[in-house]
Length: 78
Image (cartoon, rainbow, N blue to C red; front, side, top):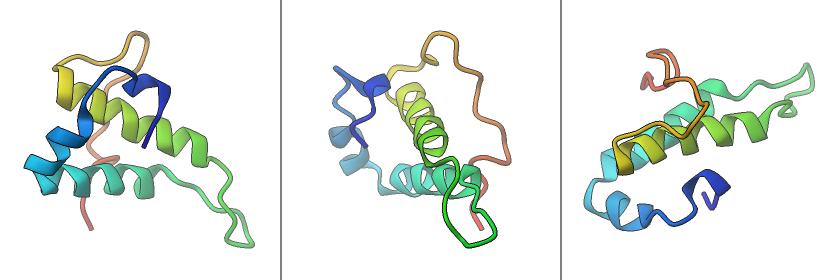
């Protein structure tokens, strides 16, 4: 991920211990990602940020300042 929201957080150790959390990160990214009529992503940075927000909350127990909580639809597994 490497998103600035995650600076100083050892999230790789957390994900190594719980692979299902990695699955949720991918689900959030995929659920938030929007594609245009050609199948090209139009909001990949936003999708990446939402996955990073979830990972930040998972690792620290808190949302990053100013970020809304993850909605149920964002982390739904299909």
